Length: 640
Image (cartoon, helix red, strand yellow):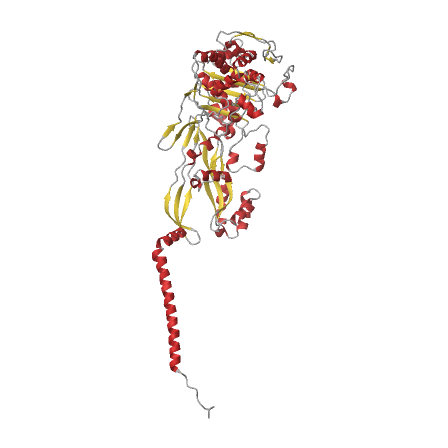
């Protein structure tokens, strides 16, 4: 009977259990809904501004736009540095299909250099497929024409034009202009430290040398930008806003390209430097360093072999000899030494000294030889400069001493930066007791002073320092900074480069300047002058001073023989001059390395430069009319 009993369900208990479960589920759902709506409130109400900005960042991008670099002109408006279009063949991989095959076809069609395809494929892996990648960036006009005829065969490929720096005069102005080249890591670090990095967001090039580097901020301009809308893949959909870039300012230099070309012609095949300066303003009219190199090699990135060739060239074409070349100034400093002697009372305009073949410090036996084997006899300061008598200036240096020499010659600009507006400059050496102690850990000896008296020994200078020193001499002690910049221009304004003359050296009597200048006048116009042959029959009156600087020392009884020593050990030829004599328009300083005597080799170069400046240019004959073919001429003669 018990087995047949039926089990009854407790519906009341099951109903209570269901209710409790339902209540828990409802509460859980309610909590989740509260959390959901709370989060929605936080995202859409409380954090609306934050997420709206993030959304716009994903939708809107700011694309920088590079400014056009300013142009460079010479003093007469001749273009020295311009921006030329460069044609780049670019491919959008997404539209090209088989990129490798297209690259092969284009390399064969346009005869592109080996390795072009490999560089292109490597670059496509680093870029998104919808962005264009350059296959080759320096297409010739012929290659552009060939591609244009076949473009329909290459979907996704196109030619884009960019502006690149170009120097139409090639190696004529390299050391003055410098060049632009690709921005490297060091440039980025420097720009970041100077707070200028953002202004180069779209720029690929920057000034590296010369005027291009010194006036980079003027030439570069200000970067613009455009706001563009992009889709979720980063593709540009439309342009929302455009702020155009501000182009760089054009600049005009004091350099006259006609004089520069003449200087290059005169120095062709020789190692040396010529600089021509207006002594009244400091304007640099010509600045040639030889040999030079073509700056266009660096604009698109110079090849390893080409750079190695320039770097290892024994003629050192990369060095700007006008501002970095270090040479013993030799006898070119004798006029300035004369001003010092007159102002210190060590000599007078009428003081006479007997110049024998040698000079010895009293109480010693060492002999310092004059360049003339038998000496010059009786000398006053005028004749001492005219014939460049060494013994006269040995004696002057001995009696004045190194301390005074250093004081005066420093005021003439030696051992100092000239202030020229390029960064490539060295100071040379204006020796002193302290300098020798620091450099050689030795005391200064009287014998050291004797060689300084004729611009030898420890004394070294650059051509621009010589030009500055002679400029001070012509201006009675007033100094102006040598500078290349004449003015800058924009579309609405122009500004002249400032000229601020200052008193470099003040003497007791201005007649002392005239004495030194008259001595230089006799160098060219006197019957014993060392430069009289080079300047014979000039229609203008000039003044100058030659110098012959020893490169190696000679023993006391050794005779200099240029043919018996290596070329790099031969004397350097120097010459400094100004013209016209009464109202100088230019000062010239030049050096020819290992060329020998300054009066024979360097003076004719100075003469040619003054001729180019002061004399009217030779008339250019009109081109001959084209000659008719013989059969046309015969036919014309037969006509009645």
